[in-house]
Picture 1 (tube, rainbow, N blue to C red):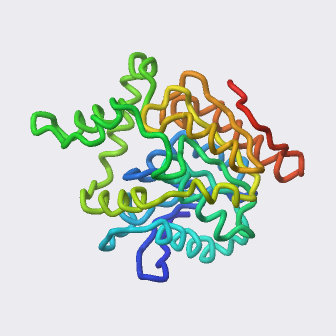
Picture 2: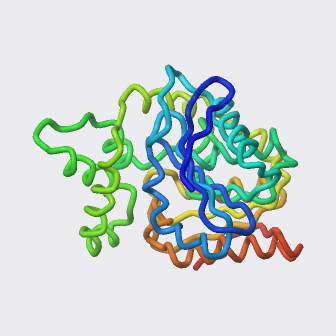
Picture 3: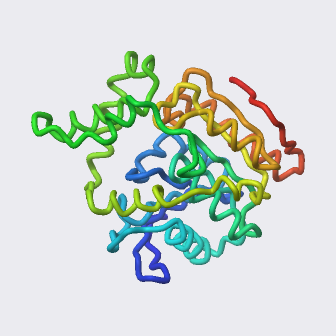
Amino acid sequence: MQSYVRTRDGTSIYYEVLGEGEPLVLIEGLGYAHWMWVEQRPLSEHVKLVIYDNRGAGLSSRPKGPYTMNDFTNDLEDLLDALSIERAFLWGVSMGGMIAMYFAVNHDKRVKGLILGETNFGTSSLPPSQEALNVLLRPPSPELDRKQSLIERMKVAFSDEFVRNNMAKIEQLAELRMQFEEDPEAYKSQLAAVLTFDFKDRLKDVRSPTLIVTGDQDKVVNPVNSYIMNQLIPNSKLVILKGAGHLAIIERSKDYNQLVLNFIREVSSGAFKPMKGPVVI
């Protein structure tokens, strides 16, 4: 099912619902759209998968900004209400992880479990690598067409080894991404929410069972932030995907998807146990 929900402030949010079972809501990162979950769609064979575009991205509308985390979580709450979902697992990657943790603290009874992927806790987090900053802050080159420009920007989201061996895959992802108009003003509006977010002191208030996942080669979000979150979120477990970059959901999709399914089953059966310190796979 594909449709739209109109939120409390009139924003139109695009969403898809695939499969049946435990609701698992996928929350995308800064400037990304639902194309990023291409490798997670098979999970609909096991759970009810809810994929949506944040305001300012993909097929959702682009209201005037700047946006706040409260705007993003209001959109998520209105989406859950429209779908009559009382409780769900939330899987947020990068900025999506920030939205998920903010939602979990403010709407604790609606969150059955959290998957925080390749994310951090806001402005007090350790910064990205200099390489990532150089790429992300560089204006588009007039010498490159849009596809090539996207490829150059996306390469930093993968490990060096993945880039060397999977350029055809990255080109396919760039073509997927090109299907969605990129609006610089909407991107700035989303970015404003990230730049005004500092959640370190609230991590102790995240009570939901939480699976924290990061790639140890992530250049966009410093992996050390995941270790800090694991120490500060009481009911959490940390898994490190060895060799994976920021888009570990693509680089290590099979392992990642299985981790998430196992987590959902453990939480649902009462078998989930928090652990301080990483499991490396």
